[in-house]
Each structure stands twice: as C-alpha cells, then as structure tokens.
Length: 444
Image 1: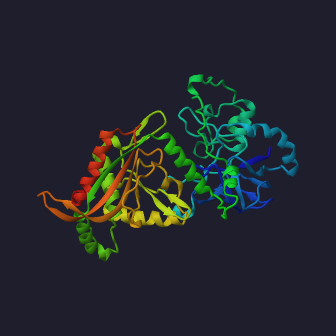
Image 2: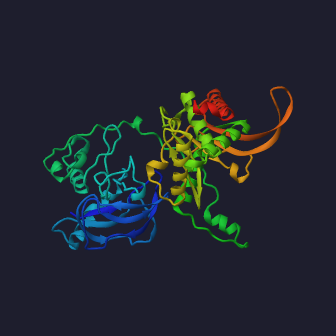
Image 3: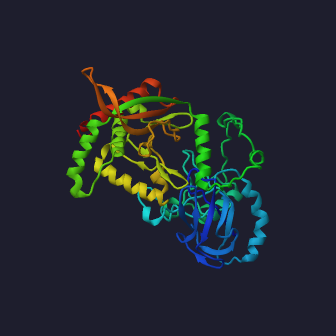
C-alpha cells in the first residue's frame, strides 16, 4: 500500500515550515537514509531523510512552498510492485486516518557540519507516514516503519506490546503480521486535563489594517522564527508568574583580572569577554544553590545536576539561545571558544536542535548596545534568566565610607515563581554577584 510522507516537525516549536527544495523527483528510487528534501524550520534549514526504501510515486507539495503545516502529506512512497494507480486506489482508504490527532512520526538529520552527540542517526530518522507514531508507557516514541504502523492500525495492535526486529529495535512489517490485537487500558477522564479558555488575542488583522488604511505603511511578512518567538513569548508572559530581582555589580576587579588573563592568553589566540565571566559565574552559582538549578515541567519541577547555561544570541529576524552544557566544569577559555562557535553558527542558522534545546538558566546581555538595565522574558521551561546591562562608571561609597568612581553593571534576574521562591532567587543572585566581584574564586 502506498505510504504518505508527511511534513515533519524538525524542532519542538515547529508548527509549519517551508519545503525549500526537493532532492529527489518522481520515479526516483530511495533507500533508508537517503536525503529527500531541504526544509526550513523556525530555526534552521535542515535535511530530511527517508526511513524506508521505495519509489517516489508522487510529489504532493512543490519545492519552495511556504507555510506547510506539520503532518501535511508532501509526497507518496511506493513499495515494490506498486504503481501510480495504487495511489488513487488507496487515497480514499487512508484519508480518514490522517484525521487522527496523535503525534506524527517525524524526525530529521542535523546539518552535516553540526552533527554531534544527540544528533539522530539514519536508523532513527526518516519520513512520516499517514498513520501516527505511538509512544510507550514511559512517553518515549516507538520506532516503526510506516507500513508496520499502518498494518498495526488496521489490526488494532498496540505497538508498545510488539518487539521490533529491525535496526535498533525498530518494528517492521514482519513483526506485526502475526501479532494478535491486545486491549489497551481505557484512559481515565482525570488523566485528560480540561482545556483552558483561550486568552483574548487582541484586534484582528483586518481591524488593525483598517485602522491604518489612511496611512502609508509597509507590510512585513512573518517568517517561521518570528511567528514562533511571538507565540512562545506571549505564552511565557501569560502563563509564567515572573518576579524580578535587581542588583548592581562592581566590575573593576573583574576588568583588571580579565585584562591580566587576556595578556597571558594572547599567544593562544584567546580573548575573554565579560560575558564569558558572566556565564561561568552563573554556572557556579547554580552549583552553589542547587535548588535554583531547576525547570518547570508542567506538573512538577525538575532539578538538574549539571549547570547548562543558555545564552541569547541575536540574529537577523530573531534570536537563538544556544546552550553551553556543563558550564561549571569548563575553563573560561573553553567557554569562550564554545560560545564563539555557537554564536557564529547560530547567525548562519546551522545549529542542530540539541545545541539550542534544554538548559535551566539563561543569560541575555544587551550591555554592548548601551542598555543600562532591562527585564528579560523567561524562556520556558527555564527557571530564570539574567538580564545584563552595560558597565557604567558611577560614584559609589566604598567600605571606608568614602565616595569613589567605580564601574557598575546593573543586572535583573527574572524568576519563575513556580520554580524558585523569592529568598532562593535572592540567594542565587547573591552568588552570581560574589563570583563576578571576586573573579579569582571562579578559578579555585
């Protein structure tokens, strides 16, 4: 039976994307692992692989098409012995199944220049079928071929009860042909939370356009990244109970220490930035206050052991927050090199999903733009984000009660009150301040 290839969800926030370019044409034979297309997500342009072998029977969505919804059929794959006539014959049978609201089986290969730990392998990636993927009791995705999933759906089989014989335990056609249906336990009504009423969306597009119909303007079309930023930050401000903690940090000791280190590291081509110290100070603070190294997980809090610090990087049309994992364990020079690499590839939209997902804490630094202070919006599921302003020379009162000029940097810690209470947030910020005002302790 012909298998529909669906538009994949190549990132957790992707709802639609651009089918930038087909790398195959109708009639081409493909094998598992072959590249099918290039797809632009809200974050990057990524390559899409085939899971099964077959022949591209029909391309349903042309290359260059924007706004293709996730799980929309984009092509049809024919098995051995099938022809275009089989596509027409099966379309009426498969159409109702596409209405299923469970999650589609979608995945992708990271761009080849950013592969690393966590990147999917050919056995894990591939095209989606018209029959949605299932998950086991632990919430983990069950890997099965599109044909196996279709047969299982027709026979009423629970894929979580079938042991796969394919690569990495993948369920294939032979595994489901002789399997017998098993009853699934009915879901309790209590397990399904009631849908919350949708918040007011504000004036409609038509109403706003009408409001400015007598004024000259340019209409800017939203790309996937800008749509995602708008949706996620709106959700964050509406659902996360933010509170804000502010401190001034004296930077003179840090600037002097940084200058000394940079002179010593000059031969190695390393130049540390103030932001490198802020990342390190935040990572060490999360270790010193482990209860604050946490994220919100819907109905529970997850406390992380490592210090994974995300850093906001501005790019054209939006931003990325690449994550520096195990930041507390890395030297300042290692953090500096990794941050430069991540920032460069973020601006080129070459980051793999595992490089900008995760973390419990984020840093957003607008000091280089001359901003004295600001409040940052928490990026869910993070527990907090540190907004960093510029270092400015100000008169301050020293320990002897005398007025002197010092370089002062204003920071604001935005905190999710569901994860971190006021006193705990204050303790975390105090640790960050102490690390930055006494920078040598970060090397101890």
